Length: 118
Image (tube, rainbow, N blue to C red; front, side, top):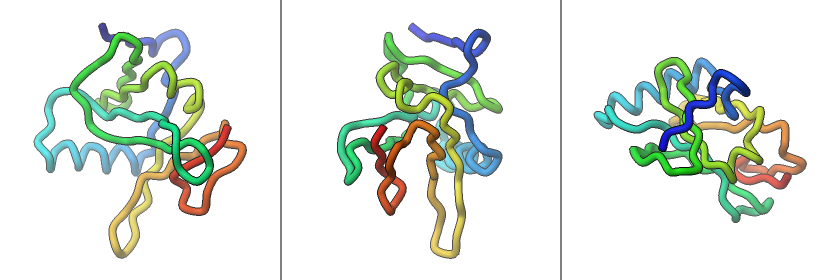
């Protein structure tokens, strides 16, 4: 049961150019051709909520799927509440790189940027 609600309200989350490039690179390296990028929120972390990012080929009944530059982005209904208006970015440095969430709903974030409170 795939929801593709991109025409009425737009995607819950957007991807920066750097994030799009890295996600496409990872999909290619791992040989993933089905499914998409699942982005979500779960309880935990030093500020109360933690971000999740992984690849998934299962679309649940309460998931929304948005296509961004050829990438399927999957967000569950509960996470969508906390991620509305968020941008996923990617920063590369000398020892690797990491995804970074720029979330306007976060009242407080931890020093590592992996958890927040809303």
